Image (cartoon, rainbow over all chains, first blue to last red; front, side, top):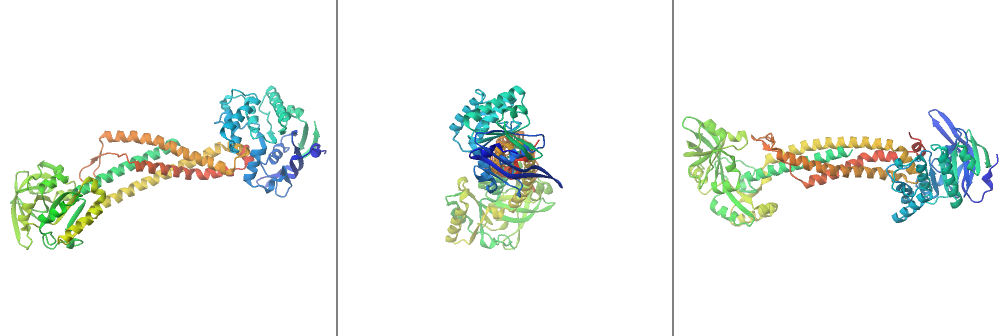
Length: 238
Length: 389
Protein backbone atom coordinates (compact mmCIF):
# COMPACT_ATOMS: atom_id res chain seq x y z
CA UNK A 1 0.00 0.00 0.00
CA UNK A 2 1.54 3.22 -1.13
CA UNK A 3 1.30 6.35 0.93
CA UNK A 4 0.96 9.31 -1.37
CA UNK A 5 1.39 11.81 1.44
CA UNK A 6 4.47 10.32 2.94
CA UNK A 7 6.67 12.54 0.82
CA UNK A 8 4.64 15.74 1.45
CA UNK A 9 6.51 18.46 3.32
CA UNK A 10 5.57 19.54 6.87
CA UNK A 11 2.63 17.26 7.62
CA UNK A 12 -0.20 18.86 9.59
CA UNK A 13 -1.50 15.64 11.00
CA UNK A 14 0.28 12.34 11.36
CA UNK A 15 -1.48 9.21 12.53
CA UNK A 16 0.83 6.35 13.44
CA UNK A 17 -0.61 2.89 13.88
CA UNK A 18 -3.86 4.15 15.44
CA UNK A 19 -6.68 1.82 16.32
CA UNK A 20 -10.13 2.40 17.72
CA UNK A 21 -12.30 -0.34 19.14
CA UNK A 22 -15.88 0.12 20.26
CA UNK A 23 -17.21 -2.03 23.03
CA UNK A 24 -20.83 -3.07 22.64
CA UNK A 25 -21.67 -5.04 25.72
CA UNK A 26 -19.34 -8.00 25.88
CA UNK A 27 -18.25 -7.75 22.25
CA UNK A 28 -15.44 -5.57 20.92
CA UNK A 29 -15.87 -4.07 17.44
CA UNK A 30 -12.63 -2.80 15.87
CA UNK A 31 -13.57 0.25 13.78
CA UNK A 32 -10.05 1.37 12.88
CA UNK A 33 -7.10 -0.98 12.92
CA UNK A 34 -3.46 0.14 12.89
CA UNK A 35 -3.88 3.03 10.47
CA UNK A 36 -0.90 5.24 9.63
CA UNK A 37 -1.61 8.34 7.61
CA UNK A 38 -0.36 11.87 7.25
CA UNK A 39 -2.12 14.95 5.93
CA UNK A 40 -0.12 17.91 4.63
CA UNK A 41 -1.04 21.55 4.12
CA UNK A 42 -3.23 22.21 1.08
CA UNK A 43 -4.15 18.58 0.41
CA UNK A 44 -7.59 17.57 -0.85
CA UNK A 45 -8.06 14.02 0.41
CA UNK A 46 -10.98 11.66 0.20
CA UNK A 47 -11.34 8.77 2.65
CA UNK A 48 -13.56 6.28 0.93
CA UNK A 49 -14.82 2.84 1.58
CA UNK A 50 -18.01 0.92 2.17
CA UNK A 51 -20.25 1.55 5.14
CA UNK A 52 -18.58 0.35 8.33
CA UNK A 53 -15.10 0.61 6.84
CA UNK A 54 -14.05 3.15 9.50
CA UNK A 55 -14.08 6.39 7.48
CA UNK A 56 -15.94 8.49 10.03
CA UNK A 57 -14.09 6.94 12.94
CA UNK A 58 -10.74 7.75 11.35
CA UNK A 59 -11.91 11.27 10.56
CA UNK A 60 -12.96 11.70 14.20
CA UNK A 61 -9.58 10.45 15.42
CA UNK A 62 -7.65 12.79 13.12
CA UNK A 63 -9.95 15.70 14.05
CA UNK A 64 -9.43 15.07 17.79
CA UNK A 65 -13.11 14.40 18.30
CA UNK A 66 -12.23 10.96 19.58
CA UNK A 67 -9.15 9.24 20.97
CA UNK A 68 -7.44 6.08 19.76
CA UNK A 69 -7.29 2.99 21.93
CA UNK A 70 -4.78 3.64 24.73
CA UNK A 71 -2.50 0.78 23.74
CA UNK A 72 -2.46 1.76 20.06
CA UNK A 73 -0.46 4.43 18.21
CA UNK A 74 -0.75 8.18 18.35
CA UNK A 75 -1.99 11.22 16.45
CA UNK A 76 0.36 14.17 16.06
CA UNK A 77 -1.08 17.56 15.17
CA UNK A 78 1.46 20.08 13.92
CA UNK A 79 4.10 18.23 15.88
CA UNK A 80 2.12 17.93 19.10
CA UNK A 81 1.18 14.53 20.47
CA UNK A 82 -2.62 14.57 20.98
CA UNK A 83 -2.34 12.14 23.87
CA UNK A 84 -0.43 14.72 25.88
CA UNK A 85 -3.12 17.34 25.44
CA UNK A 86 -5.74 18.10 28.07
CA UNK A 87 -9.42 18.24 27.10
CA UNK A 88 -9.25 22.04 27.04
CA UNK A 89 -6.11 22.01 24.90
CA UNK A 90 -7.81 19.66 22.43
CA UNK A 91 -10.82 22.00 22.36
CA UNK A 92 -8.56 24.98 21.71
CA UNK A 93 -6.72 23.13 18.97
CA UNK A 94 -9.97 22.22 17.20
CA UNK A 95 -11.15 25.80 17.56
CA UNK A 96 -7.98 27.38 16.19
CA UNK A 97 -6.62 24.87 13.66
CA UNK A 98 -9.55 22.74 12.49
CA UNK A 99 -12.84 23.27 10.73
CA UNK A 100 -15.70 20.79 10.57
CA UNK A 101 -18.42 20.20 7.99
CA UNK A 102 -21.07 17.62 8.79
CA UNK A 103 -23.44 15.57 6.69
CA UNK A 104 -26.46 17.10 8.44
CA UNK A 105 -24.93 20.61 8.45
CA UNK A 106 -25.23 20.89 12.28
CA UNK A 107 -25.92 24.59 12.33
CA UNK A 108 -27.25 26.09 15.55
CA UNK A 109 -30.95 26.56 14.78
CA UNK A 110 -31.51 29.61 16.98
CA UNK A 111 -28.61 31.55 15.45
CA UNK A 112 -28.64 33.40 12.13
CA UNK A 113 -26.22 32.51 9.35
CA UNK A 114 -23.90 35.30 10.41
CA UNK A 115 -24.07 34.28 14.06
CA UNK A 116 -23.37 30.66 13.18
CA UNK A 117 -20.27 31.69 11.24
CA UNK A 118 -19.20 34.07 13.98
CA UNK A 119 -19.56 31.48 16.77
CA UNK A 120 -16.06 29.90 16.46
CA UNK A 121 -14.61 33.43 16.36
CA UNK A 122 -16.48 34.28 19.55
CA UNK A 123 -14.88 31.22 21.16
CA UNK A 124 -11.51 32.57 20.03
CA UNK A 125 -12.44 35.93 21.57
CA UNK A 126 -12.26 37.83 18.31
CA UNK A 127 -13.71 41.33 18.94
CA UNK A 128 -17.37 41.67 17.99
CA UNK A 129 -16.86 44.15 15.14
CA UNK A 130 -14.10 42.01 13.64
CA UNK A 131 -16.28 38.88 13.98
CA UNK A 132 -19.10 40.57 12.16
CA UNK A 133 -16.84 41.80 9.36
CA UNK A 134 -15.19 38.43 8.86
CA UNK A 135 -18.44 36.48 9.09
CA UNK A 136 -20.00 38.66 6.38
CA UNK A 137 -16.91 38.30 4.19
CA UNK A 138 -16.99 34.52 4.58
CA UNK A 139 -20.69 34.33 3.76
CA UNK A 140 -20.01 36.47 0.70
CA UNK A 141 -17.18 34.14 -0.32
CA UNK A 142 -19.53 31.13 -0.22
CA UNK A 143 -22.16 33.00 -2.21
CA UNK A 144 -24.55 33.86 0.59
CA UNK A 145 -24.56 37.65 0.55
CA UNK A 146 -27.92 38.86 1.77
CA UNK A 147 -28.52 35.77 3.89
CA UNK A 148 -26.65 37.04 6.95
CA UNK A 149 -29.74 37.49 9.10
CA UNK A 150 -31.52 34.33 8.01
CA UNK A 151 -31.89 31.38 10.32
CA UNK A 152 -30.93 27.89 9.08
CA UNK A 153 -34.49 26.60 8.86
CA UNK A 154 -35.22 29.14 6.12
CA UNK A 155 -32.25 28.08 4.00
CA UNK A 156 -32.04 25.27 1.45
CA UNK A 157 -29.78 22.28 2.06
CA UNK A 158 -27.08 23.68 -0.23
CA UNK A 159 -27.24 27.06 1.46
CA UNK A 160 -26.97 25.46 4.89
CA UNK A 161 -23.90 23.54 3.81
CA UNK A 162 -22.39 26.77 2.50
CA UNK A 163 -22.98 28.36 5.90
CA UNK A 164 -21.34 25.33 7.49
CA UNK A 165 -18.33 25.71 5.17
CA UNK A 166 -18.07 29.41 6.04
CA UNK A 167 -18.24 28.48 9.72
CA UNK A 168 -15.51 25.87 9.25
CA UNK A 169 -13.26 28.58 7.79
CA UNK A 170 -14.03 31.13 10.52
CA UNK A 171 -10.77 30.87 12.43
CA UNK A 172 -8.64 30.32 9.32
CA UNK A 173 -7.97 26.63 10.00
CA UNK A 174 -5.19 24.61 8.49
CA UNK A 175 -7.49 21.65 7.79
CA UNK A 176 -11.22 21.13 7.31
CA UNK A 177 -12.75 17.75 8.14
CA UNK A 178 -15.88 17.01 6.14
CA UNK A 179 -17.96 13.95 6.96
CA UNK A 180 -20.19 13.03 4.03
CA UNK A 181 -20.75 16.71 3.18
CA UNK A 182 -22.77 15.94 0.05
CA UNK A 183 -24.87 13.09 1.38
CA UNK A 184 -27.93 15.28 1.95
CA UNK A 185 -27.58 17.33 -1.24
CA UNK A 186 -28.75 16.76 -4.78
CA UNK A 187 -26.08 16.16 -7.42
CA UNK A 188 -26.17 19.69 -8.81
CA UNK A 189 -25.81 21.26 -5.36
CA UNK A 190 -23.13 18.71 -4.51
CA UNK A 191 -21.15 19.82 -7.55
CA UNK A 192 -21.46 23.45 -6.47
CA UNK A 193 -20.37 22.70 -2.91
CA UNK A 194 -17.39 20.68 -4.08
CA UNK A 195 -16.38 23.38 -6.54
CA UNK A 196 -16.54 25.87 -3.67
CA UNK A 197 -14.37 23.65 -1.50
CA UNK A 198 -11.83 23.24 -4.26
CA UNK A 199 -11.69 27.01 -4.75
CA UNK A 200 -11.13 27.55 -1.04
CA UNK A 201 -8.53 24.79 -1.00
CA UNK A 202 -6.66 26.42 -3.82
CA UNK A 203 -7.03 29.99 -2.63
CA UNK A 204 -6.32 29.52 1.08
CA UNK A 205 -4.12 26.43 1.11
CA UNK A 206 -6.53 24.84 3.55
CA UNK A 207 -6.35 21.05 3.57
CA UNK A 208 -9.66 19.20 3.14
CA UNK A 209 -10.19 15.70 4.41
CA UNK A 210 -13.45 14.02 3.40
CA UNK A 211 -15.07 10.88 4.67
CA UNK A 212 -17.27 9.93 1.73
CA UNK A 213 -18.70 7.29 -0.48
CA UNK A 214 -19.89 9.86 -3.03
CA UNK A 215 -18.18 9.32 -6.41
CA UNK A 216 -18.44 13.09 -7.06
CA UNK A 217 -16.18 13.78 -4.11
CA UNK A 218 -13.78 11.01 -5.00
CA UNK A 219 -13.51 12.32 -8.57
CA UNK A 220 -12.54 15.78 -7.31
CA UNK A 221 -10.06 14.59 -4.68
CA UNK A 222 -6.36 14.84 -5.42
CA UNK A 223 -5.64 11.92 -3.16
CA UNK A 224 -7.89 8.99 -2.32
CA UNK A 225 -7.41 6.80 0.72
CA UNK A 226 -9.48 3.65 0.60
CA UNK A 227 -10.42 1.93 3.82
CA UNK A 228 -11.63 -1.61 4.25
CA UNK A 229 -12.57 -3.18 7.56
CA UNK A 230 -10.88 -0.35 9.42
CA UNK A 231 -7.55 -0.61 7.65
CA UNK A 232 -6.01 1.39 4.78
CA UNK A 233 -6.38 -0.61 1.62
CA UNK A 234 -4.85 1.96 -0.70
CA UNK A 235 -3.60 5.56 -0.56
CA UNK A 236 -3.05 6.96 -4.01
CA UNK A 237 -3.10 10.27 -5.86
CA UNK A 238 -6.28 10.71 -7.87
CA UNK B 1 -40.54 26.15 32.55
CA UNK B 2 -40.93 29.91 32.70
CA UNK B 3 -44.53 29.34 33.81
CA UNK B 4 -43.40 27.02 36.62
CA UNK B 5 -40.79 29.52 37.80
CA UNK B 6 -43.28 32.36 37.44
CA UNK B 7 -45.84 30.48 39.50
CA UNK B 8 -43.21 29.70 42.13
CA UNK B 9 -42.08 33.29 42.28
CA UNK B 10 -45.65 34.63 42.44
CA UNK B 11 -46.38 32.22 45.29
CA UNK B 12 -43.33 33.49 47.15
CA UNK B 13 -44.21 37.13 46.55
CA UNK B 14 -47.90 36.77 47.43
CA UNK B 15 -47.31 34.56 50.46
CA UNK B 16 -44.53 36.90 51.62
CA UNK B 17 -46.80 39.92 51.25
CA UNK B 18 -49.63 38.16 53.02
CA UNK B 19 -47.39 37.00 55.88
CA UNK B 20 -45.84 40.44 56.22
CA UNK B 21 -49.27 42.05 56.32
CA UNK B 22 -50.48 39.47 58.84
CA UNK B 23 -47.47 40.01 61.10
CA UNK B 24 -47.78 43.76 60.75
CA UNK B 25 -51.48 43.67 61.63
CA UNK B 26 -50.80 41.31 64.52
CA UNK B 27 -48.02 43.53 65.80
CA UNK B 28 -50.12 46.67 65.38
CA UNK B 29 -53.06 45.07 67.16
CA UNK B 30 -50.82 43.82 69.95
CA UNK B 31 -49.19 47.19 70.48
CA UNK B 32 -52.57 48.94 70.37
CA UNK B 33 -53.54 46.65 73.22
CA UNK B 34 -50.43 46.45 75.44
CA UNK B 35 -48.56 49.58 74.31
CA UNK B 36 -44.97 49.84 73.10
CA UNK B 37 -43.70 49.76 76.66
CA UNK B 38 -45.14 49.16 80.10
CA UNK B 39 -43.87 50.57 83.38
CA UNK B 40 -44.48 48.26 86.32
CA UNK B 41 -43.18 47.81 89.80
CA UNK B 42 -39.98 45.78 89.84
CA UNK B 43 -41.58 43.27 92.18
CA UNK B 44 -44.24 42.49 89.60
CA UNK B 45 -41.73 40.87 87.25
CA UNK B 46 -42.33 37.13 87.33
CA UNK B 47 -44.62 37.26 90.35
CA UNK B 48 -48.40 37.28 90.83
CA UNK B 49 -50.00 39.66 93.31
CA UNK B 50 -51.38 38.00 96.45
CA UNK B 51 -53.39 41.12 97.30
CA UNK B 52 -54.94 43.75 95.07
CA UNK B 53 -52.39 46.33 93.89
CA UNK B 54 -49.71 44.68 96.05
CA UNK B 55 -47.19 45.68 93.37
CA UNK B 56 -48.92 48.89 92.35
CA UNK B 57 -47.20 52.13 91.38
CA UNK B 58 -48.02 54.77 94.01
CA UNK B 59 -48.23 58.49 93.29
CA UNK B 60 -49.52 57.67 89.84
CA UNK B 61 -50.10 61.29 88.80
CA UNK B 62 -46.41 62.16 89.30
CA UNK B 63 -45.27 58.93 87.67
CA UNK B 64 -47.46 59.67 84.69
CA UNK B 65 -46.05 63.18 84.28
CA UNK B 66 -42.47 61.84 84.38
CA UNK B 67 -43.24 59.45 81.52
CA UNK B 68 -45.17 62.08 79.55
CA UNK B 69 -42.12 64.37 79.52
CA UNK B 70 -40.07 61.95 77.41
CA UNK B 71 -39.72 63.31 73.85
CA UNK B 72 -40.55 59.95 72.23
CA UNK B 73 -43.68 59.30 74.29
CA UNK B 74 -47.03 60.03 72.67
CA UNK B 75 -49.40 58.78 75.37
CA UNK B 76 -49.26 57.43 78.92
CA UNK B 77 -52.22 55.28 79.96
CA UNK B 78 -52.63 54.33 83.61
CA UNK B 79 -54.26 50.96 84.16
CA UNK B 80 -55.43 49.07 87.20
CA UNK B 81 -55.82 45.33 86.85
CA UNK B 82 -58.20 43.71 89.30
CA UNK B 83 -60.70 40.91 89.70
CA UNK B 84 -64.09 40.87 91.33
CA UNK B 85 -67.71 39.90 91.12
CA UNK B 86 -70.40 41.73 89.18
CA UNK B 87 -73.99 41.28 90.17
CA UNK B 88 -77.34 42.35 88.79
CA UNK B 89 -79.01 41.70 92.15
CA UNK B 90 -80.03 38.21 91.14
CA UNK B 91 -76.93 36.71 89.68
CA UNK B 92 -73.18 37.26 90.35
CA UNK B 93 -70.48 36.61 87.74
CA UNK B 94 -66.72 36.87 88.24
CA UNK B 95 -64.91 39.37 86.02
CA UNK B 96 -61.41 40.46 84.98
CA UNK B 97 -61.45 44.21 85.39
CA UNK B 98 -59.30 47.01 84.14
CA UNK B 99 -59.39 50.59 85.34
CA UNK B 100 -58.58 53.10 82.61
CA UNK B 101 -58.37 56.80 81.91
CA UNK B 102 -61.10 56.81 79.24
CA UNK B 103 -60.01 59.79 77.15
CA UNK B 104 -56.40 58.78 76.42
CA UNK B 105 -57.44 55.10 76.32
CA UNK B 106 -59.97 55.83 73.59
CA UNK B 107 -57.46 57.91 71.64
CA UNK B 108 -54.54 55.46 71.77
CA UNK B 109 -56.14 52.02 71.69
CA UNK B 110 -58.71 50.10 69.71
CA UNK B 111 -61.13 50.16 72.68
CA UNK B 112 -63.83 52.38 71.08
CA UNK B 113 -63.73 50.24 67.91
CA UNK B 114 -64.62 47.17 69.95
CA UNK B 115 -67.95 48.63 71.12
CA UNK B 116 -70.87 46.70 69.64
CA UNK B 117 -73.63 48.29 71.66
CA UNK B 118 -73.91 51.60 73.54
CA UNK B 119 -70.75 53.71 73.73
CA UNK B 120 -67.30 53.72 75.22
CA UNK B 121 -66.45 55.50 78.46
CA UNK B 122 -66.07 59.27 78.26
CA UNK B 123 -64.58 62.02 80.45
CA UNK B 124 -63.22 60.47 83.68
CA UNK B 125 -65.65 57.60 83.29
CA UNK B 126 -67.80 58.55 86.28
CA UNK B 127 -69.88 55.51 87.23
CA UNK B 128 -69.71 54.15 83.72
CA UNK B 129 -68.48 50.67 82.89
CA UNK B 130 -68.21 48.66 79.70
CA UNK B 131 -68.69 44.91 79.66
CA UNK B 132 -67.63 42.14 77.36
CA UNK B 133 -70.60 40.79 75.41
CA UNK B 134 -70.31 37.42 77.13
CA UNK B 135 -70.27 38.96 80.61
CA UNK B 136 -73.24 41.20 79.78
CA UNK B 137 -75.12 38.19 78.50
CA UNK B 138 -74.38 36.23 81.67
CA UNK B 139 -75.59 39.17 83.78
CA UNK B 140 -78.51 39.78 81.40
CA UNK B 141 -77.75 43.51 81.26
CA UNK B 142 -77.65 46.07 78.45
CA UNK B 143 -76.43 49.66 78.15
CA UNK B 144 -78.16 51.84 80.71
CA UNK B 145 -78.59 49.04 83.28
CA UNK B 146 -76.95 49.23 86.69
CA UNK B 147 -74.51 46.62 87.96
CA UNK B 148 -72.91 46.29 91.38
CA UNK B 149 -69.18 45.56 91.39
CA UNK B 150 -67.56 43.83 94.33
CA UNK B 151 -63.83 43.41 94.90
CA UNK B 152 -61.25 42.97 97.61
CA UNK B 153 -59.52 46.19 98.62
CA UNK B 154 -55.80 46.58 99.21
CA UNK B 155 -56.20 45.82 102.90
CA UNK B 156 -58.19 42.68 102.20
CA UNK B 157 -61.71 43.83 103.02
CA UNK B 158 -64.62 43.52 100.63
CA UNK B 159 -66.02 46.64 98.97
CA UNK B 160 -68.74 47.32 96.44
CA UNK B 161 -69.68 50.18 94.10
CA UNK B 162 -72.47 50.64 91.62
CA UNK B 163 -71.72 51.14 87.96
CA UNK B 164 -73.82 51.98 84.93
CA UNK B 165 -73.34 49.95 81.79
CA UNK B 166 -72.28 52.42 79.10
CA UNK B 167 -71.50 49.95 76.38
CA UNK B 168 -70.78 46.38 75.40
CA UNK B 169 -67.52 45.42 73.71
CA UNK B 170 -66.38 42.46 71.70
CA UNK B 171 -62.70 41.96 72.52
CA UNK B 172 -62.35 39.28 69.80
CA UNK B 173 -61.35 36.53 72.21
CA UNK B 174 -64.32 34.52 73.43
CA UNK B 175 -62.94 33.61 76.86
CA UNK B 176 -62.11 37.23 77.56
CA UNK B 177 -65.50 38.44 76.30
CA UNK B 178 -67.08 36.33 79.04
CA UNK B 179 -65.08 38.10 81.77
CA UNK B 180 -64.11 41.56 80.50
CA UNK B 181 -65.06 44.70 82.43
CA UNK B 182 -63.57 48.21 82.19
CA UNK B 183 -64.28 51.27 84.27
CA UNK B 184 -62.79 54.69 84.88
CA UNK B 185 -59.75 54.96 87.17
CA UNK B 186 -61.85 56.99 89.64
CA UNK B 187 -64.57 54.33 89.97
CA UNK B 188 -62.05 51.50 90.23
CA UNK B 189 -59.93 53.40 92.78
CA UNK B 190 -63.05 53.89 94.90
CA UNK B 191 -63.86 50.19 94.62
CA UNK B 192 -60.34 49.15 95.58
CA UNK B 193 -59.94 52.06 98.00
CA UNK B 194 -56.52 52.82 96.54
CA UNK B 195 -56.38 56.39 95.31
CA UNK B 196 -53.33 57.40 93.26
CA UNK B 197 -52.15 53.81 92.81
CA UNK B 198 -52.14 52.00 89.47
CA UNK B 199 -50.97 48.56 88.33
CA UNK B 200 -48.98 49.90 85.43
CA UNK B 201 -48.40 52.73 83.03
CA UNK B 202 -48.89 51.77 79.39
CA UNK B 203 -46.62 53.84 77.14
CA UNK B 204 -47.32 54.56 73.47
CA UNK B 205 -44.40 55.94 71.50
CA UNK B 206 -44.73 58.44 68.71
CA UNK B 207 -44.96 56.66 65.33
CA UNK B 208 -41.50 57.74 64.17
CA UNK B 209 -40.04 56.67 67.53
CA UNK B 210 -41.08 53.03 67.37
CA UNK B 211 -37.62 52.10 66.10
CA UNK B 212 -36.12 53.86 69.13
CA UNK B 213 -37.98 51.65 71.59
CA UNK B 214 -34.83 50.55 73.40
CA UNK B 215 -33.48 54.07 73.77
CA UNK B 216 -36.82 55.32 75.09
CA UNK B 217 -37.04 52.40 77.55
CA UNK B 218 -33.55 53.09 78.89
CA UNK B 219 -34.31 56.79 79.28
CA UNK B 220 -37.58 56.15 81.09
CA UNK B 221 -35.96 53.67 83.46
CA UNK B 222 -33.31 56.24 84.29
CA UNK B 223 -35.84 59.05 84.85
CA UNK B 224 -38.06 56.92 87.10
CA UNK B 225 -35.09 55.69 89.09
CA UNK B 226 -33.93 59.25 89.60
CA UNK B 227 -37.43 60.15 90.85
CA UNK B 228 -37.37 57.32 93.39
CA UNK B 229 -39.74 54.88 91.63
CA UNK B 230 -38.56 51.23 91.84
CA UNK B 231 -39.90 50.33 88.44
CA UNK B 232 -39.06 48.08 85.51
CA UNK B 233 -39.75 48.80 81.85
CA UNK B 234 -41.21 45.95 79.83
CA UNK B 235 -41.25 45.76 76.03
CA UNK B 236 -44.34 44.81 74.08
CA UNK B 237 -42.77 41.59 72.79
CA UNK B 238 -42.25 40.36 76.37
CA UNK B 239 -45.93 40.90 77.03
CA UNK B 240 -47.25 39.54 73.75
CA UNK B 241 -46.89 35.79 74.21
CA UNK B 242 -49.81 35.27 71.82
CA UNK B 243 -48.08 37.33 69.13
CA UNK B 244 -44.96 35.19 69.37
CA UNK B 245 -46.93 31.95 69.25
CA UNK B 246 -49.00 32.99 66.23
CA UNK B 247 -45.89 34.25 64.47
CA UNK B 248 -44.11 30.92 65.00
CA UNK B 249 -47.19 29.04 63.84
CA UNK B 250 -47.42 31.06 60.63
CA UNK B 251 -43.69 30.80 59.96
CA UNK B 252 -43.95 27.04 60.39
CA UNK B 253 -46.93 26.70 58.03
CA UNK B 254 -45.59 29.00 55.33
CA UNK B 255 -42.07 27.61 55.69
CA UNK B 256 -43.38 24.11 55.03
CA UNK B 257 -45.46 25.23 52.06
CA UNK B 258 -42.46 27.19 50.74
CA UNK B 259 -40.22 24.13 51.05
CA UNK B 260 -42.75 22.02 49.12
CA UNK B 261 -42.88 24.74 46.46
CA UNK B 262 -39.08 24.79 46.14
CA UNK B 263 -39.00 20.99 45.77
CA UNK B 264 -41.66 21.18 43.01
CA UNK B 265 -39.71 23.87 41.15
CA UNK B 266 -36.40 22.01 41.56
CA UNK B 267 -37.89 18.76 40.23
CA UNK B 268 -39.69 20.48 37.35
CA UNK B 269 -36.58 22.44 36.43
CA UNK B 270 -34.35 19.36 36.65
CA UNK B 271 -36.73 17.42 34.37
CA UNK B 272 -36.95 20.27 31.86
CA UNK B 273 -33.18 20.83 31.84
CA UNK B 274 -32.52 17.10 31.46
CA UNK B 275 -34.92 17.03 28.52
CA UNK B 276 -33.20 20.08 27.05
CA UNK B 277 -29.82 18.36 27.31
CA UNK B 278 -31.19 15.22 25.69
CA UNK B 279 -32.94 17.11 22.89
CA UNK B 280 -29.84 19.20 22.23
CA UNK B 281 -27.26 16.43 22.46
CA UNK B 282 -26.29 16.77 18.80
CA UNK B 283 -25.99 20.53 19.21
CA UNK B 284 -23.77 19.99 22.24
CA UNK B 285 -21.60 17.68 20.13
CA UNK B 286 -21.36 20.34 17.41
CA UNK B 287 -20.40 23.05 19.88
CA UNK B 288 -17.76 20.80 21.41
CA UNK B 289 -16.41 19.91 17.94
CA UNK B 290 -16.14 23.60 17.10
CA UNK B 291 -13.94 24.10 20.14
CA UNK B 292 -16.25 24.90 23.03
CA UNK B 293 -14.63 23.73 26.23
CA UNK B 294 -16.56 21.44 28.64
CA UNK B 295 -16.77 24.36 31.08
CA UNK B 296 -18.34 26.43 28.30
CA UNK B 297 -21.12 23.86 27.87
CA UNK B 298 -21.62 23.76 31.65
CA UNK B 299 -21.77 27.54 31.78
CA UNK B 300 -24.16 27.69 28.84
CA UNK B 301 -26.76 25.45 30.50
CA UNK B 302 -26.31 27.10 33.90
CA UNK B 303 -26.77 30.50 32.23
CA UNK B 304 -29.93 29.23 30.57
CA UNK B 305 -31.19 28.16 33.99
CA UNK B 306 -30.53 31.63 35.38
CA UNK B 307 -32.09 33.34 32.34
CA UNK B 308 -35.19 31.15 32.70
CA UNK B 309 -35.29 32.02 36.41
CA UNK B 310 -35.08 35.76 35.75
CA UNK B 311 -37.62 35.63 32.91
CA UNK B 312 -39.93 33.50 35.04
CA UNK B 313 -39.58 35.92 37.93
CA UNK B 314 -40.48 38.88 35.71
CA UNK B 315 -43.56 37.03 34.47
CA UNK B 316 -44.32 35.94 38.03
CA UNK B 317 -43.97 39.52 39.27
CA UNK B 318 -46.62 40.73 36.83
CA UNK B 319 -48.84 37.80 37.75
CA UNK B 320 -48.36 38.45 41.48
CA UNK B 321 -49.22 42.13 41.12
CA UNK B 322 -52.40 41.32 39.20
CA UNK B 323 -53.45 38.62 41.67
CA UNK B 324 -52.61 40.92 44.59
CA UNK B 325 -54.80 43.69 43.20
CA UNK B 326 -57.60 41.17 42.62
CA UNK B 327 -57.37 39.72 46.12
CA UNK B 328 -57.24 43.11 47.79
CA UNK B 329 -60.30 44.23 45.86
CA UNK B 330 -62.20 40.99 46.44
CA UNK B 331 -63.27 41.73 50.01
CA UNK B 332 -62.81 38.07 50.93
CA UNK B 333 -62.99 37.62 54.71
CA UNK B 334 -60.49 35.19 56.15
CA UNK B 335 -61.44 32.88 59.02
CA UNK B 336 -60.60 34.26 62.49
CA UNK B 337 -57.01 33.66 63.58
CA UNK B 338 -56.39 31.51 66.68
CA UNK B 339 -58.16 32.96 69.73
CA UNK B 340 -60.14 35.57 67.80
CA UNK B 341 -63.88 35.64 67.20
CA UNK B 342 -63.92 37.67 63.99
CA UNK B 343 -62.33 37.11 60.61
CA UNK B 344 -60.46 39.83 58.78
CA UNK B 345 -60.55 40.91 55.14
CA UNK B 346 -57.73 39.48 53.05
CA UNK B 347 -55.04 41.98 52.25
CA UNK B 348 -51.72 41.26 50.55
CA UNK B 349 -49.01 43.87 51.03
CA UNK B 350 -46.45 44.79 48.39
CA UNK B 351 -43.48 43.51 50.33
CA UNK B 352 -40.26 44.19 48.35
CA UNK B 353 -38.21 41.81 50.46
CA UNK B 354 -40.49 38.93 49.40
CA UNK B 355 -39.91 39.82 45.74
CA UNK B 356 -36.14 40.02 46.21
CA UNK B 357 -36.13 36.79 48.23
CA UNK B 358 -38.33 35.13 45.58
CA UNK B 359 -35.92 36.14 42.82
CA UNK B 360 -32.95 34.90 44.84
CA UNK B 361 -34.70 31.63 45.67
CA UNK B 362 -35.69 31.00 42.04
CA UNK B 363 -32.22 31.80 40.67
CA UNK B 364 -30.64 29.54 43.28
CA UNK B 365 -33.22 26.82 42.68
CA UNK B 366 -32.76 26.93 38.90
CA UNK B 367 -28.98 26.95 39.25
CA UNK B 368 -29.11 23.86 41.45
CA UNK B 369 -31.66 22.17 39.18
CA UNK B 370 -29.60 22.98 36.07
CA UNK B 371 -26.24 21.98 37.48
CA UNK B 372 -26.45 18.20 37.15
CA UNK B 373 -27.97 18.14 33.63
CA UNK B 374 -25.43 20.81 32.64
CA UNK B 375 -22.57 18.77 34.04
CA UNK B 376 -23.84 15.72 32.16
CA UNK B 377 -23.96 17.80 28.97
CA UNK B 378 -20.38 18.95 29.44
CA UNK B 379 -19.18 15.37 29.82
CA UNK B 380 -20.89 13.80 26.80
CA UNK B 381 -18.42 12.20 24.41
CA UNK B 382 -18.33 14.32 21.24
CA UNK B 383 -18.69 11.48 18.76
CA UNK B 384 -21.61 10.01 20.68
CA UNK B 385 -23.27 13.42 20.82
CA UNK B 386 -22.79 13.96 17.07
CA UNK B 387 -24.30 10.55 16.36
CA UNK B 388 -27.29 11.20 18.64
CA UNK B 389 -30.63 10.95 16.87
